Length: 419
Image (cartoon, rainbow, N blue to C red; front, side):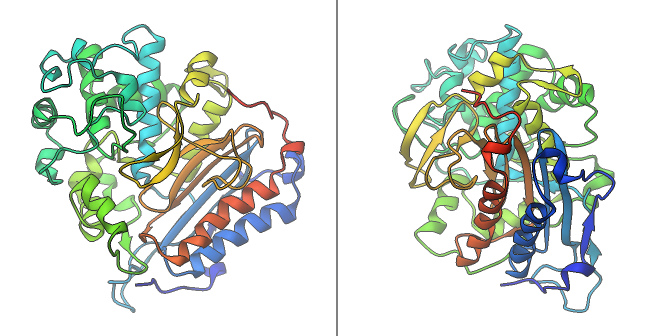
């Protein structure tokens, strides 16, 4: 299933007022043109109704553009129905890339002495400490080693998903699928809800309120929050199933981790309840610019526009490697994790070639937000198509490969790794 592809010039929106002269940051106009050409190629693959990309180099925006349609051009939409053009400042759900932001909330609590990463979760939520979870720690949750990547028999239900008390009861009753700390297994949703419950217990605020008041408001973020206000639901890019049908065995990964099919996941993601609720592992909503800006905060070791949020040691700890290219038993592939981030590699990496010190996170299914300290870049690439393992996704990987190739490390001003 593919979307209708239009003349790129007719469906492109650029933030020309923000884009700086690339020569100011050691790039050329040809470098920026090549980055955007890779996005146009991805759009022409027909996998995404909308794509938005923002790239900062040495803290300055060199590219902030979007292409396609906010809604009305999904494969299932009428060919001649109404379509809403995308804008460079349109909103997207970043899905699992939310985990990186949620992890930084945890690190901020630790920085302030309100929690400690190696404390047992049961120290903050006593009723959680049963069925073999008595010694499970926050570090294990952040590194996908807690042993509860899913709750067997549970299926995503929005009525449950958005009810913190019912969710916590399910997690307290859950039995680990493996001994906590022993096995690497991606926690698609469970870890975020545990974090959310701890934030509520130690601060008296839900995680959305805490993130907004302690991080986003001081930095002047307008969105990039858990969900949106009901009045803004239609401002969020509509997600669409695209590409080849998801077939076993890859399709089992999503079913096993979320309890739903790709089609069901996309349908849920467009539901107003999901878009206005709090899903710590999966519903940060914002612009590509805000995604890039948040990672610029981390690239700057906790300071942005003169405002300090995190101590440098807090940021360095958050991106320090915790698993050394082990096979993730749920994803079925080798992944390097820190406490909250997927790390790059010197060989094959989602962040482009030779990106060992890059850190970020991917989101369902072609969303990626990251920073590469050696190249002094922070990137937000947001998409609304939801293909699941298809050859066309090579165009997606080519975007990050092009950015990495065009942003040479030798020209970067701030080229020191954070760890």
